[in-house]
Length: 194
Image (tube, rainbow, N blue to C red; front, side):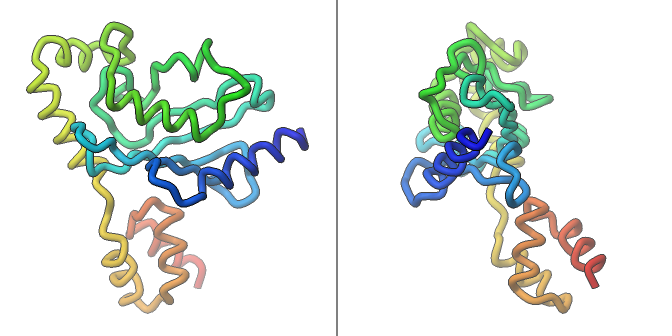
């Protein structure tokens, strides 16, 4: 268990390093390495460009010998991602996982999947059918979903609005980050903390 935690800490440090990959992961709760929050920037040149996609990551007890359990919490229109539940159809998250892989490589694989859908092995048959029958309609729908569900919030404006209610900047940012930039939830938490 201690070795697995050491490995996870190293993996998360690698996910925090500034790079151009567009993927990150961090614990949902400080100190809990078994439940992570990942983000993936939509790949440039795809209908997901400009979006930031949230991924829930659960680390099994026998990690790295078993794959992490991942699901999108951001709605995504993609043949290999359930439009309802965020479940992902990707071989490395199932039978092709190797202990040599990491959280970051898994997130990069999800990002690559966004570039190259596999409609012949779908998670969402309706989306796969559209992808194969009418690519233009698929791309238009995927872009709409990206605009609607995955566009980053104006973080500075949200912080300013919460601060205007009498809260300090640091508390406002922490509450907003904790609640995925949901201003109402952040303010409710801050009010409860008074």
